Length: 286
Image (tube, rainbow, N blue to C red):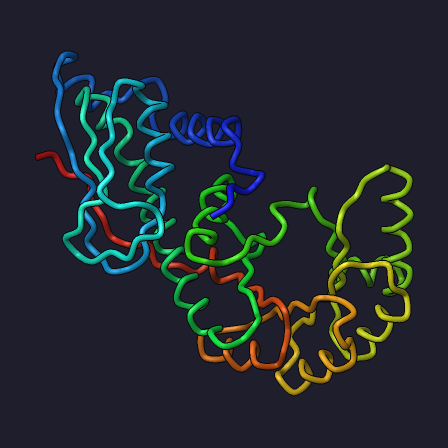
């Protein structure tokens, strides 16, 4: 997996620091009160579900952020298929440090593994087609970095990370701008005036709107929103390869294969990050 641009050391440190500040506050008083400062112990990450493992690398960063002297012995890596009873890694060092990092590690890995598991399943349903699975911005506030990372681990593709790295002209943008042509032309003028180079995607709701995008031009991708498969096939024929096409809106496990078979290039599924069951796991002393 190629490292995405958002996975910088600075971004990881900021995420971990703010998450620990929320949890630890002015101190982990449970560990400080009950555990001697000099105590050293080990713990392993026990998997209690079947799925795709994600978050091992993030766990390494969390443990080392809490205490640089903690050592992590990986038994499994991100992307591994896991079953109940598997051990992902062993961590060893100051007992207080292990306990302070425990919940953040578990919260991240459980949710990331749930996302990776769901992503891998939906990707498997696209076999035999050229469609690729995209995530969305429907993420948990302040938890987008791990959630999008988990999509990659599961075999999906990240859409834009935020509002800053791509222009997507959705229905409200188009309506407020006065139409598709006006929205595209205003966006292109904005990019020229600000010397920015950002891709432009336009959401369309009808074949007539798809034709308006084609007539205007100057964009990079067309989104086909909430179109049934028959209409998607018409849109694919109408565009005829001039722009990549993304199907979006209400796509489920039951419908994704049929959508992919229409010939679209991408399928975006918000449920990858907003409707996920976390994998069960525990950090156990031994």
